[in-house]
Length: 320
Image (tube, rainbow, N blue to C red):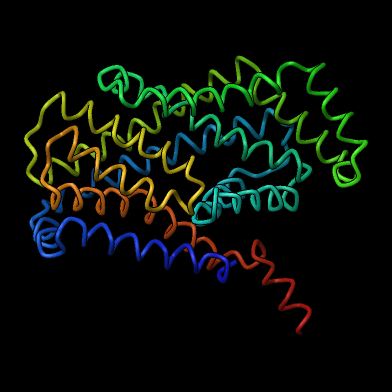
C-alpha cells in the first residue's frame, strides 16, 4: 500500500511546489510566514468537525447495509485508515475499506463497496448544494455544475428503478467477464438500493452539507489569517470556492483531486475575490494542508498501529 501511495504523495509535493511557483515563491513564502498562526487551531477544529459528521454518516450507512457486529472503535479505525487512500486515482483505493469491513464484520466486500460509493455520491451532492448560490451568482459555472449533478443523480435514479436495474444485471450475466461477477454485482446493487432510498439519500446529503460547510468556513478563517477583511460575502465565497473546487477535483479522477482542486481554489480566489496571486496561493496551500494532508497524516498514523489492516500481521506470522 505504501508503494502505491508514493506516486500520489510525490505528485502532491509537485503540486505544492507548482502552486507556490505560480504565485511567486518568495511572495507566497512571505504570506505564509505572516499568517496569523493561532487561527490555524480553529481551522483544524472545523476540519475535525467535518470528519466527525462524516463518521456519523458512515455509521448510518453501515447500519443500513446490516452491519450490527462492528465495535465503534473498530469502525472508527477503518474509517480513518481510509483517509490516505484518497491519494489514489479517482479515490479507487478507498474500496480497500470494503475489504477491511469484510474482515471485521459479516458484511460482504461488494456491499462494503456500496458504502464507499454512497459516501462519494452523497458528498458530491452535498457540495453541489453548498455551491448552488455561488453558481447562481456566477453563471459561467452552470455547465460544470449541471454535468456533475446529472451524473450523480443518474446513478441514484438507476439504482432506484429496480426492474430496470435488475434487467441490466440479468443482461450482464450473459457476458463472459461480467457473468463471473454476477453475485458480487447483485450484492453491490442491493447495498446501493438501500443506501440511495429517498430518506437515506436526503439524510446523507443534509449531513454532508453541514460537514463540508465546516471546511468552507475553515477556508474563510485561513483568509482572515492572511489579512483578508472579515465580510459576509467573503464567507459565502469561501464556502463556494471550497465546495466547487472539491467537486472539480473529484471529477478529475486525479489522486486526492491534486492539481485540479488546488488550481481551482487558487484561480477562483483570484477571479472572484480579487486576491493577489501570492495570497491566493498561500491560502490554497494552507487549506489543503489542513484538509487533505492532515487527513492523510491521521490515516498514516492509524496505519502505524494497524498491521492487520495492511496484511503485515499475516506476513510476520508466515515469516515466523
